[in-house]
Image (cartoon, rainbow, N blue to C red; front, side, top):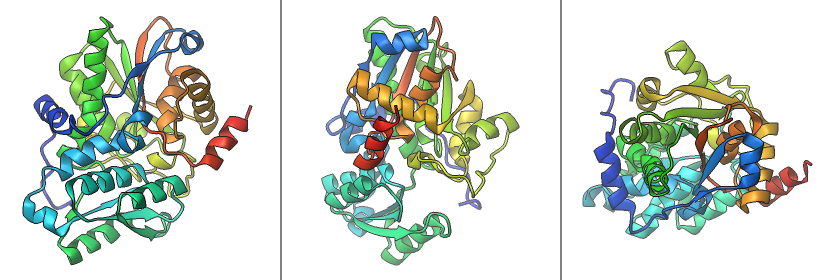
Amino acid sequence: MANLPLPTAPDIEDVRSAADRIAPYAVRTPLLESSHLNEISGGRLLIKAEPLQRTGSFKFRGAFNTVSRLTEEDMAHGVVAYSSGNHAQGVASAAQILGILAVIVMPEDAPRVKIENTQSFGAEVVFYDRYNEDREAIAEQIAEVRSAALIRPYEDPRIIAGQGTTGLEIAEQSRERDISLDAVLVCCGGGGLISGCATVFAEEMPETDVYSVEPEGFDDTARSLAAGERLRVDPDCRSFCDALQAPMPGELTFSINKRLLAGGLVVSDAQVSDAMRQAYDRLKLIVEPGGAVALAAALSGVFDCRDKTVAVVCSGGNVDADTFSRVLGEL
């Protein structure tokens, strides 16, 4: 891919087109609010509840937008994807809806719920060691052998446009309630969701600042923004935010994010755990670790919400029961 021209970044019209395409299948998730969380943050928080999305995360948006745009010939050969779980489920679900075969390359240590859900959509799962094997190379080889379409998790304008529908809904829902947003906080792994949302807000609400949020150790986007170039994650780093462990920002996504983001924020696992508990206690929302980092930034003060109105994307809720029970027990 490094030898190919960088794909053209999607624009707001691409996001609107994606919104129309996924509308019959995706959930228009709510913006939730809690007076208790507002009190903790010192501002007004509007929580975009993507755990309520089809497959339990925002990933369905980009997956369906991309898979549904394949040619009939491509669909006949099926699709291949690599993912720690949420993109996996999104692609598997989209393939099932469209009646095509899907092979998903997943890490052996992915949360059991993500593996089982992916298989429940009829996908074939191929496991790999995330610390010693290259998931992209494995997926590319399978795609070549099967002449299947490779659906990348973030380095694809169609994926980015689909994920951007999350931001489009936030902008629409805010206007419906006559709310002006000071900032939007969005989780960041490879950068598909945040780049899609940033594309939307640059056009729809240019006065609104958009920030990426990452877990400690996997703060490659925050460091890359500061350095002005893409930087890698230390391969020895570990985090329980399994959904946000991309090795470095995507080339396409970073080309968007370095232009449009106001900055990058970093939170600890302890702050993430607290945010997961607060979401459960106050919003009755189950949020997985990677899906809770933006809320963690707002509640911990990593982002100063005082006297601001801030939209926070809780991006997914696919967490194993034992992990969630352990988090709830850490009082």
